[in-house]
Length: 353
Image (tube, rainbow, N blue to C red; front, side, top):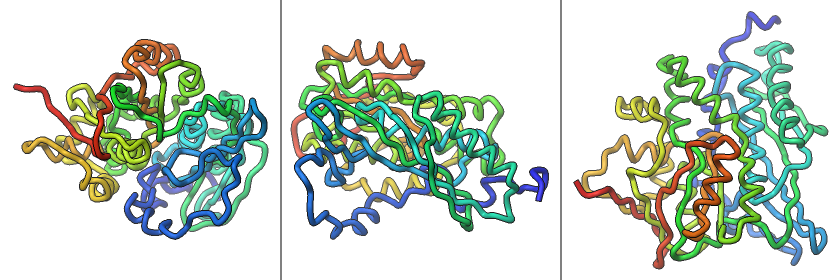
């Protein structure tokens, strides 16, 4: 089989990118009886707060961050697919305030449906990102699978006193989002052959931009909590932060950055199936204006493959946080709301008209 005979990558998958994730409420039910029987004291972060990675303390100065992430194609270009999947997997290390040290490739490919040349390009894309992050691919595992799957197990290091979790947001904090929303809308449009070349390039630029600010943010006094916004959408990941931190969150709708093309497509009705599942999972704790449009709700639950970091920090630290984002090429970062006292919930407010 030759590369020219390969079908479109996205045609081989029933879903793509982080939109493949199991819905939060279903996942919660599946894991409801999965608490570990033994949790050593050195296991500083586990699955109990739905955080981005596990953290295990090695010494007084060093803790190990461990995570894994993989999914099916979100784009048809094999090299771009590999780059996106690797960037997304490394994001969990950065979201914990860590720096990645090495990775392991997780590969499932439909042998006989994809040529060896195409599979090599997927692996090359992932390797290019890992090399740029100074986290080389040191090994991995592969299987013959019905759909193409690629991702990484990633390991990193962080100081035990500088770990960023989703459980330390404080009343009075401001919320900062590192990348605009709309990747899921772009991916849905791509599958329907509705995505313009310009919007495709916007999607690729965002999904392959490493969340390196996370490692620097951990050193800023006043940065209290962080997570990355991926498959559960902004509302899903912010709801997890609110629950873990036992606080309420307020989003200022007009300040939430959305890719222009994605906003236009969403108004035309383009969305992923995951946005509806995400909304069903968190709607009980979300307050929206009475006239809030469906397309806007879909944007806030849009699955973000390799999305931005969501940071909760003291107001006086906001300029420093935005400066770190800008210095790492994340020009779209913006203050989008604040943390308030109260039962865990997320309220969306629109400016008076």
